[in-house]
Length: 248
Ligand code: NAP
Image 1 (tube, rainbow, N blue to C red):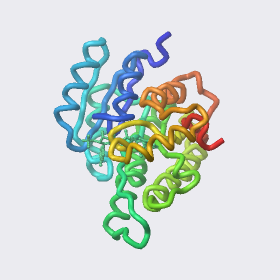
Image 2 (cartoon, rainbow, N blue to C red):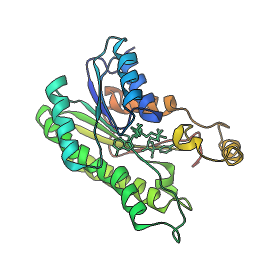
Image 3 (cartoon, helix red, strand yellow):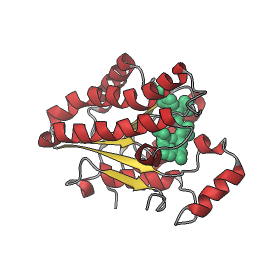
Image 4 (cartoon, rainbow, N blue to C red):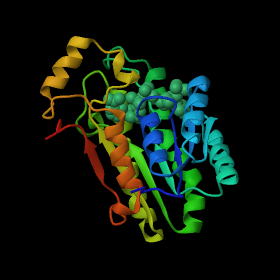
């Protein structure tokens, strides 16, 4: 059963990793997809071609989600090209890990801008259109680290906890217009973001997860399909952990 047939989804940061996984699974469910990336033009083109072959409309846009004006332009361009927007997945994110004693002001600000301010930029840009059509689903990519904190990731954890507060506030503001806003808190998902980590550390994480494995982008993507589709029509303001039981 195709759960997103005929819907248009915007996904930020889909040239690789979890965002790419979401684009692939959304396309398989019949959604038309507009996605953004920061610099991976080649990977974006490949994804565009691969998904277009499945009979859905797909277009990649180079757009910095942390930039307010670029986010407005991106959404305007998508609405002009696709005729509207039903789903927004705020997925773009970065890490610049360091202990508080070593972290620079620049690295703190950058992570907040790309991970948290981007969510404000994009949500503000789509709300005009979603308000008019009186429907929409917004999904924000938080993290288990935003729920419980993590040594060496104070900037990242603050950005991801901020996303949860933002999500709940928007759910309250826009619920009466049938616009839903939920967050996903992935645990350890094996992507390029985590490939830079020491293999021994990674294996010890896998061993400590109740389901005994790292997650795959598809695991997060499937949760996004649920929150994007009408299957979750009565669910808003929630944080869904996709973490193999890590926070249990
Ligand atoms: P990733 O593999 O590093 O991919 C990040 C994506 O975001 C890329 O497509 C990148 O584009 C894009 N991006 C980066 N900065 C951007 C910007 N300013 N504007 C637009 N796009 C931008 O990361 P990931 O592991 O898939 O993570 C995706 C999301 O899940 C992030 O928000 C992350 O915090 C969250 N998350 C991940 C994990 C995990 O274990 N992996 C766990 C919890 C939460 P380019 O390719 O052009 O650089």
